[in-house]
Every structure is written in structure tokens, then in C-alpha cells.
Length: 381
Image 1 (tube, rainbow, N blue to C red):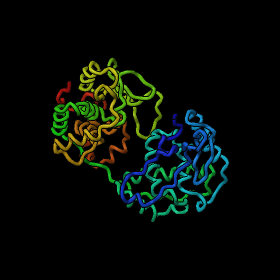
Image 2 (tube, rainbow, N blue to C red):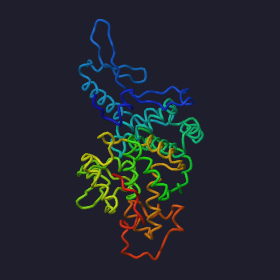
Image 3 (cartoon, one colour):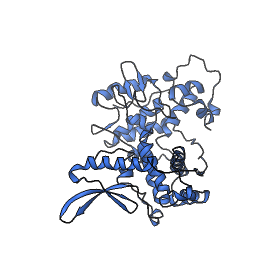
Image 4 (tube, one colour):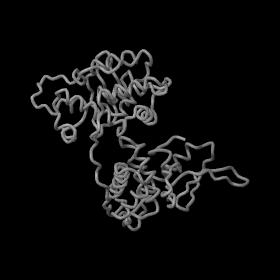
């Protein structure tokens, strides 16, 4: 069936709640969804289940796409005809469902919104909007048992959904969503010896050799994880690419939606340009590949090589911090670093690591792309 909203998980009864023991004590209110109803003596038919009510679509299993279109029209009608309601009369599940269907598909990362809604449903699903209070927000954080950063992102989606429903006049007034304090910035970065150690370990194992490429791109260009994993060799509307002929890294596709996380192009340092020429010969489709296919995530492999290298307190984003720190140590100005690494000057200046590294008399013609490293890292073929 062709999905029309955030993901099949949210609308078509495929939402999955994060499996923690604390979460399972709440029964989720499920959003409207399709269900294939078997009928004795008659053909099966898709019906819409919506909080105890059942509406027939009139379509059987051979017409799944038509049934899904019927569900789409049903949801659009439901929300377009809803009267303005008070917080005490509206379920949080309805708020999240409306946001998932009407707005989330147009966000920069619908899948991430979908995962947040998935987690929120487990605790908030059967609560009313009037129950969105500071105490319940605190309880949600305790029940989820994840980091404050994750809780902030998830409750941020709840806040956005409530504000959306108020703006669309589904809801009379959106309550305040209380978020945990913003975690302090990470101040961990890797030395050249540590990066070289990670590279050596990644190269030894055929299952992690692609992560060595990821590390090199990250520490030479400071590009974020998702952008690196999407890199190809040819111009694309929805993914970045490396232009070897002109020596340019395009971090985003021509038609990709811009977000607060800047993804501006940058000149490739000579070191990574040499690597890139060799990589393209081996895999002409994408930059980071595993068994010939584009890699979706490297979390497991990354954790393995960090464990084998006995390097702690780091994650994949640490490589971006490392790239910026090395540049500042090599006498880059904050403005130069912000431009090259697609990061705001404010972010660089506010990082606790960097004030002692600033060199204010750096020449204006300093070319950061050729000065990121004082010495090359081991060549990866």
C-alpha cells in the first residue's frame, strides 16, 4: 500500500511503542486505521477503525490502494469539519494524529517526527490536552528513561502538534509543554592519534571498512552524519554529492529542504579529494557503501570500533567537533571555520573547547581547506 502520511507506522496501525517495561502499563489510543474485516459468507472488506466506531470502505483486499485513499479522505474530512474544542475535550492522540497527517509529511524529516509521535502515544495517547502539565511532562521523562536530549526532541514534537492544532483552529488554546533543560554542549574531540587508531581498526575488518571512509569525510569536512551517508558521485535533487572534477562537496541535493542545520557546499581539502578519486573507481554509485549498497546507518559498526579502540565518550557527531577543533588549532578564524563547516559562528564561539584555541591575528587569506590538518591521516584505499 502506498503511504500518504508520516509513515505507515502512524496511520495504518503500524505505530510501535518503544519497548520499555515502564511504558507498557499505558494502553495507547490508536489513530484511525484500516483493518481487513473478514465476513462469513461474504468477501472480506477494508474498514476504518476509529475509537470504537467502524466505517466500511467498500473495498476488498484486491483494492488496497483505493481503501487507503478512502482512509485519506476520511481523515481529511474528520479534521476539516471539527469544531474548535477546549483542551479538556480533546485527546492528545487526536492532536498527534492531525499533526502527523496534515503537517509532518512537509517537514524536513518526516521519519523523525514519526518516531517521536510513536513514543509520545504510549504515555499521552489517552490523556486529554488539559493534562499536558509540568508534572506530567516530568513523569513522561521518567517513564521513557532516555536522555534529556531525546525527551526535548519528543516533547518538542508534542508542543509543535499542539500549536499546529491551535493555529488550525481545532483547539481553543494550546497548553505550555515543559521541556527538560537543554543538555550542555559536548566538549569531547579526538586527537590525530585517536582518529588514526579508529581508522586502522575499521580497515582491518571487512564489515567496518566503509566506516573508515565515513571517518575520513567527517574529520576532513566536518559534514554531519546523515549528509555523509547520502553522498553520491552525481548531481541529485535529494542527496548531496562529491564533484571530483571541480573539487566541491555538495552537502545537500538541489531540491532538499533547508533546515536550521546548514548544509552549504565547500571546497574539498586535497587529502579527501585524493581518497575520493580512489573510492569512485571501486563504487561509482555512492560514497559510503556496504556490499555495494548505500549505508543507512553506522551506529553498530561505530560502537564496535570505538570499543575495540578503547575510546570512550564519543559518538559520530564528535567527528564534526574534532574537525572544527583541529581547524582552530591550525589558526583558523571562527568566521572561516563557520563558513567551511556549515556551522554558525555563535555555535563555534560558544563551544567550551574553543576560546583558548582562537587566534585573532590569523591572516584574512587563510585557506582553511588546505590547513585543517598539519599531517595527513593514513591513506585508505
